[in-house]
Figure (cartoon, rainbow, N blue to C red):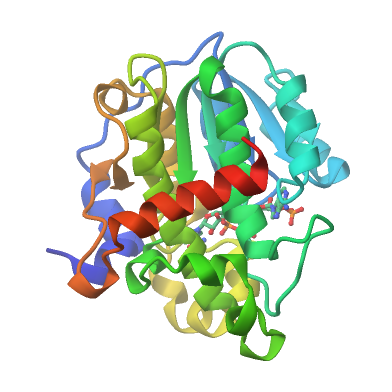
Length: 296
Ligand SMILES: NC(=O)c1ccc[n+]([C@@H]2O[C@H](COP(=O)([O-])OP(=O)(O)OC[C@H]3O[C@@H](n4cnc5c(N)ncnc54)[C@H](OP(=O)(O)O)[C@@H]3O)[C@@H](O)[C@H]2O)c1
């Protein structure tokens, strides 16, 4: 009913009138990637406030320690991992605890130009999709909930597996669009959420995707400065954007289903127009591409 206004602070405030505090998480472990900034930091603080121990997964340990000091040094630890590196992700998985209540794939990028990781993958695909896919595969047996932080931007995009691979025309540096690559990876995250939910026993692991609405974070400021300038009075703060991440990690309702896409604690459709619907073969191909690239 609210349409795009629902992504703003107004939408959050209207819906939040019905929210109740999520249950306590004492003794539970929350793992949050990209915890040095914006939504990741806000989600980590939210989990700490519920009594969880939070593992801040960061690529810069000094920044991680600053966040740890801020949100609660006794309730958090820092783990270094560049999630765009599959080698780093494997090392992280080996170092994480045997029981994890919630794993939040929050780290995300929108690079201005075509960039490849040392392992040869396009950076947006490596950070937003491949690293999270591998970590989910390695931790699924010991994680109760997985939360993929996607974006409302994915509504504009039909899944394009060739573009994810950034080969041929789509891999041409002149032809590369960061916003297109970003929306494509965010669409892929939602499709993979559904595919993981089909493959994993929900009694052991549930997998959800969410989008935070439009939140005023350093990431938004850097990647969409014009949009931020115009929309600033309407943007949510990071805490409001991260509210659904924390709720998915703590509340009972997300355990009763798996594979949904959420905004402000309510399930959302994954398509608004027919032309963004991917075929069954594209869905299967996405899975195969991720499994092959990660060896998972
Ligand atoms: N803000 C919004 O309105 C909005 C809307 C839709 C979706 N989202 C999604 O929400 C998530 C968080 O966004 P944000 O707005 O909070 O952005 P942000 O302020 O830029 O934070 C991104 C975080 O990801 C980390 N990160 C990036 N690449 C990484 C890597 N390779 N390995 C480990 N960490 C890495 C960054 O670490 P450094 O501190 O080292 O850079 C930072 O902590 C993203 O997935 C984004 O797509 C945000």
